[in-house]
Each structure stands twice: as C-alpha cells, then as structure tokens.
Length: 44
Image (cartoon, rainbow, N blue to C red; front, side):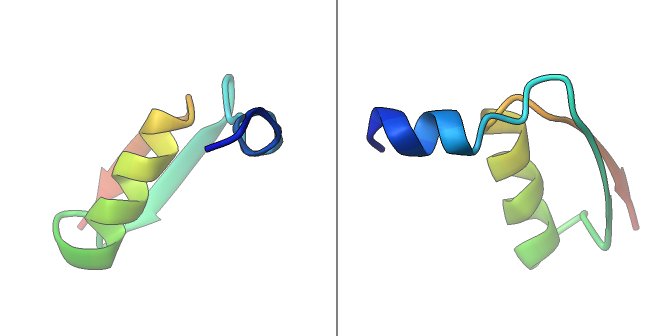
C-alpha cells in the first residue's frame, strides 16, 4: 500500500473486539487489524 493508505488506516493504540473471530471472515479481520497496529480480542 502507498504511504497515504498506511497512514489513513493506522490503528496504533486502538482496541477492537471481534465476535466470531475463531475462523473465517472474523479471523481475517483480526489479522488485518493487528497488522495495522490494533490490539484485538477475539470472542467466539
């Protein structure tokens, strides 16, 4: 991604809770959020 997108989606210091995060779309979203710097809690 370009610098703009990296800065626009910087989630450093943010927290997220994902329900249904053990597999599928929830797990994919969790990986993306972690890559962007968020702390993620998965609930299933």
